[in-house]
Length: 89
Image (cartoon, rainbow, N blue to C red; front, side, top):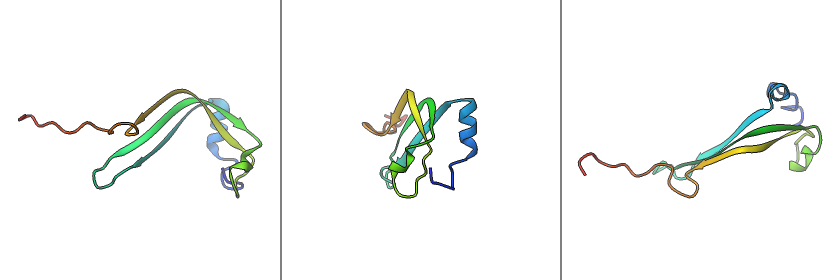
């Protein structure tokens, strides 16, 4: 999180009340063939008040750690969707 721009965001207050969190990272590996890929992590959020500066210049001390309970992915080790099958085959 950037210092001054996110260190006191609303979602942090929500995580203090209900620490269940989900993190999704996705993109499209090849736009021409539309091959989406991604990962979904669900777990318990742990709010840290110091140490975020090590992430890089401009980052503030606060950061959120998601301790995974459940992880799934698509399009990482295999195609995201199987090839289409025609009814006429």
